[in-house]
Image (tube, rainbow, N blue to C red; front, side, top):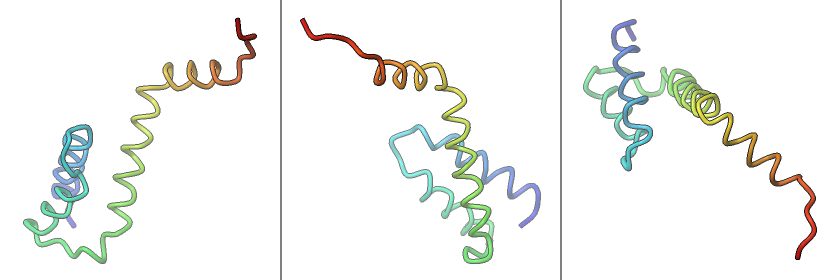
Length: 78
C-alpha cells in the first residue's frame, strides 16, 4: 500500500465514522478499488479504527470525565 492510498483510506474512515453508514464497509470498498490486499493490511485496518477511537476519546474528554465523576459521586435520594 502506498502512502497516498493510506491517506485516502484514512480519510474515508474518518469521514464515514460518524455517519449512519458502515465505515468499515467503506474502508473495505476503498481497499478493493485500490487493489489493496485485504489480508496483508489487517494491521492497517486495526490502526485506523484505533486512531478513530482515540480521537473520539480526545474530542469527548470533558463529557467522559463529567459522566465518570457523576457516576461515582454520592448523593442521598430525597
